[in-house]
Image 1 (cartoon, rainbow, N blue to C red):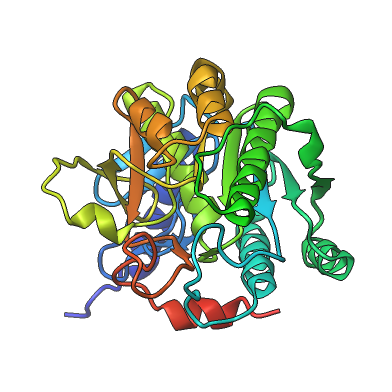
Image 2: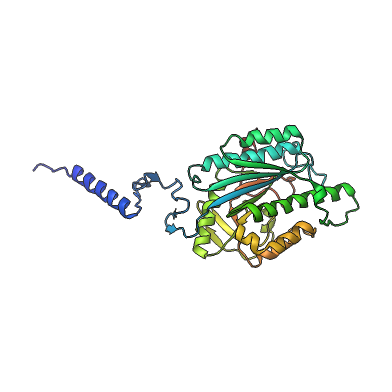
Length: 342
C-alpha cells in the first residue's frame, strides 16, 4: 500500500497554530531546536519587551506593571587624581584618565548594544567633572558622541560647597580630595532630585561595564519591581567582600542574570527618583558629612529597602588587585578591560 505523506498538511496546521498564538499573545517553544516561532527568536535571545513583558524560561512571562520611562546616567569624573585616600596603584597600573575613558566607553558600548530595546526610554548622560584637563574633557565628549544621546558636562566649583564636612586626616591634600568627591556626590543627588523623571544610575569613573549591563539592569528593574510591587536599588558589581560574611541572601531571577539581596554597596548604584526623594535626608547626610565607612547612611537605607547585586558581576571595579572592594569573582577582567580600549 502506498504511504500517504501528510507533511504539507502538518506544516499548514503548524503555521496556522503559530499565527493563532501570535494573535492571542501566546509564546511557544520548539524543544527540538529551542526556537520560538511566534517571536522568531531562539531561547538564548533576549525574549522580553521593555515596558511590556519579560519571558524567563521555563518560568514563563511576567507582564510589566512598572515600566521604566527614563534613565539618567550620572558619571562623576576626575582624570587628575588617582585615588582619593590611597597611594596604591589600580589594576593594570594605568593613568587615572584611562579608567575614566574606559568607564564612559563601556557605558556607551552598553547603550549601543541595548539601543533597539531601549528606544522608548528617554536617556541622558550627565558628566560631573572635577578639575580634569581640557583635552581629557574633549576626549570624553568624543566618546559620548559615538551614540545619538543627550549629554551635559558640569564643571564642579568647590567654592559652592562650604557646607561639606570631612573627617580630619591630618593631610590637607587628602581632605581636599575627599571634599571634591563629596561635592560630586552631592551634585549627582541634586541632579537626580531636580531633573530625573524615573531611574537614575550613579556611576564612579572606575567601573568598566559589560555590554549587556544596561539592558540587564533596566529589564531586571522592571521585572522585579513588578513582581514585588516596590522600588529597588541595583548594584552592577558582585563585590567580593560580601562573601566574607554569613549574611542571609535571597536569590531572584532577573532578565538573564541571577540577582541576590545585599546589605551594602559602594557609590555606584541604580535606583528610582521615588527612592531618592523618599530618602533625601539620608542621602544628603552622606554627601555633606563624611562617615566611616563612607557609605554608612546608604547601608541604613538598605535595612528598609531591597538592594540587589548580580551573579556574576555586570561590571568591574578597578581598584588595587588586593582590594576586597574591587575585583569580582568569575569575570574575565583583562578581556573586559581590553574590549573598552579607546
